[in-house]
Image (cartoon, rainbow, N blue to C red; front, side, top):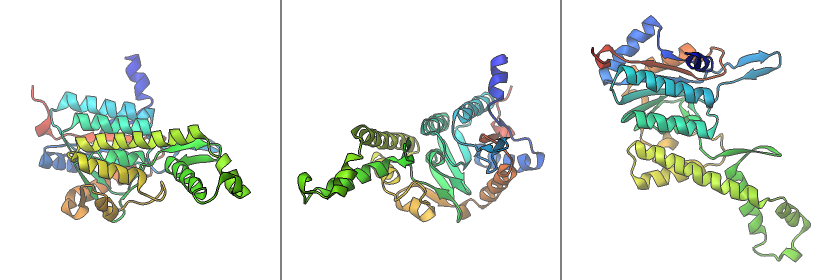
Amino acid sequence: METVDSINKIIDVNEEDDPSLSEKLTEISKKHDAVLMACIAPYVGLKISPTKTICAQMGLSEEFAVETAINQIQTKTDARKLLLLVNSPGGLVQSSYKIARALRKAFNEIIVFVPHIAASGGTLLALTGNKIVMGMMSQLSPLDPQAQSDDGVVSANSVVDAHQFVTMLFDDVAIEDAPYSYKALADKFDAVEIRDALASLSLMEEYVREILEGGGYSKEQCKKISNSIVRGFKTHDEVINVDKAKKIGLNVIADRDFPAEWNLFREWLAKYILQSADKHVIRFVISENLIHKG
């Protein structure tokens, strides 16, 4: 019991208890014979001192929260279809991957709804969907790994691209004849840093391929999409909207194909989006017809 109490202090996971909202969500659960789950990072951080605020990001709390939610769901139902609402800025790559993998293992069919932002690690969660429902303000993001350096946060793609750029400078000039600026740039590169950047890009592509394979994409589609989303964008902050998501091969569905679900999930998001929190809010709904009898 002490262990359970300790875990409950670091997670925010419950069955949705707002009577009006829960009733409407239950109807959607019944309509689709599916569990409904929301994974929401509120936009207002938790102020822990006069000068410091912590915002929700994928991490240990979210790992425990999603594990707890899945365990609670599986004690109530054998349903293997999930309608998942994702709103997240991402966070730790390893946490996002573990959560995405756990959801893919727990459910056979997942439809992901992204009313606003599923960025970085949140994008990895969105990729669990056999279908991803997006609207005019929906946003995914590239999955190029980010790393801390002496200059702050640096994209692995940036490290690799910069090294290739400097290498190309010496294609037409011998090292001994190169301008000082060329040599100065070349001297800044650390072989270990470049190797780590290449390894992190390769690993992220592996993660993406695994999650996509679980969502029904072919091996060829997984290879193409993983390469595009990890290495094919200009910056980590680039907006992947509906059109770009379709262009790279994701199975994206327009919000107008799920009007009732879309509007209700936006309402669900609105309930939690402006609350003050340092962790993702995890809520779920299961209709009575899906619950174990006896």
